[in-house]
Amino acid sequence: MKKQLTANELRQKFIDFFVSKDHVQISGASLIPENDPTVLFTTAGMHPLVPYILGSDHPSGKRLTDYQKCIRTGDIEAVGDPHHLTFFEMLGNWSLGDYFKQEAIAYSFEFLTKWLNLDISQLSVTVFAGDDLVPRDEEAAQTWESFGIPRERIYFLPREDNWWGPAGETGPCGPDSEMFIDTGRPSCGPDCRPGCSCGKYFEIWNDVFMGYKKNSDGTYEEMSRKCVDTGMGIERTIAILQGKKSVYETEVFTPIIAGIERLSQKHYGDDEENDVSIRILADHVRTSVFILGDQRGVAPSNVGQGYILRRLIRRAVRHGHKLGIEGAFLGELALIVLELYGVPYPELVENREFVLKELAQEEAKFSETLAKGEREFEKMLPNLLKGNSRQISGRTAFKLYDTYGYPIELTKELASEHGFTVDEAGFKEAFEKHQEISRSGSEQQFKGGLADHSDKTTALHTATHMLHKALRTVLGEHVGQKGSNITVERLRFDFTHPAPMTAEEIQRVEDMVNEAISQNLEIVCETMTLEEAKEQGAIAFFDSKYGEQVKVYSIGDYSKEVCGGPHVQNTSQMGRFKILKEQSSSAGVRRIKAILEK
Image 1 (tube, one colour):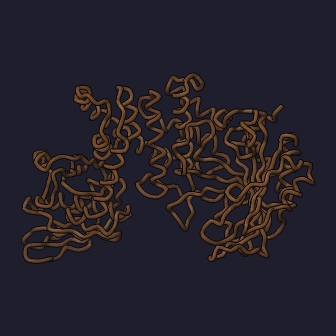
Image 2: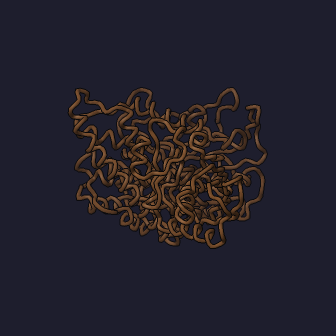
């Protein structure tokens, strides 16, 4: 009978065990490395400890233990099955130049069999098989054998299975030894072994032995300072201890799933299609709360970890709608996550208001996008039904994506409901063509003059349109853009006007732009002909440079202008607008330099 150990109990039991072995508990690191804001941690605590692995003394000593937040986003689309997660917790212990393989394996064996009471007959392990660069790990195998694991349950596997690192091209690395529990399921075939995807073997722990350093020439040398880093996933471990078939059946998910059931009136376990959406929603809202609530929490954006967050939130919203949930719902589910994890991760409670505010804003924004896309699809449907083909063209699917932000996955779902398929290859071709056009010169075509497409530059580009509108309002409609140049630090905007602006006019323009920014206006992009754009009141000053179809960016009801992009999605992403200088550029042309302050 499996031990019914909860996540909280496992977390505490692990820490107590290693503290009893003279380890010092250290606090969990941020998900977002301070020196690289574009990525998220994927392993428990490895990155902040690298300097100590290389030789520096850690202030807490040589034996450390911790529980750590981890993010895995390389296979987001796989989430939805009973096992994949984007967020998980990792228990870990480290030896920084102290004990090595024999002691690390001894600790693992003792914790699994004495503290967790696992049956040794269910335990199998893997070790590094060796190759031309590094020899076979007989020491690890013999150590496991000395604790009673028979040779037939010790598997020697290649580098892709039992080797860690280095984190970059060079640095500390080494073989590992992984521990698996036999679930009792029948083998899938004669080659079934730990690591097989059939589900017979359930990985529970991994000991990494960093005894090597990889050099720039590809060779490996043994390090005099050998270190150990281990990792045990909490969700997977409690699932096997509780005899559950899935991590989604454990108490770290059941309260979230109960909340989804209440909101959707769908019962988990009744319908597999609904179950997939419930698992995706449960996982993604939990992950989003942890990213937002991190010590260095970030807001949704179009780059780096902000983009990962936006993708998770939008996928959660889409599957919530698919389940039939009406109105805003992410906040209610987020409160459940905060209640579940507020004690072990107090930073979540400290950042509670930020978490709820950002979720609400992103949910509202994307819900509107979904509604617009659905309305446009319904408009297209009569003509689609009249045709002989039952395939929606890639160009049509891309228009829904490019103009309304409608995900291709949702277009496929809507198409399927009406007996259509989508030309995904055509969509990909249209998408890649659009990317190439954007890369090769939207700035030249539309006088954008952007240094790059970073968040700061994009925000400043949006500010030029708002400045343009304010100038035409304050000075008169004779004002027209003559050119612009934008870097990550500032914008430069040239416009027609016969005289220097007064201090009062400059202040009025600045105030008008900031007033519009403070209204958190959504920026919407639509594709149409130049004639249609002008009929809608869009400003367009470079007629000879535009193609057959143009993009029209509307900043709420504030302004509407033909432009090649890029723009922020909402003025709340911009900051405070400040004019630095107004001066002459040439005869009849004035120049403004301005910045956005945080």
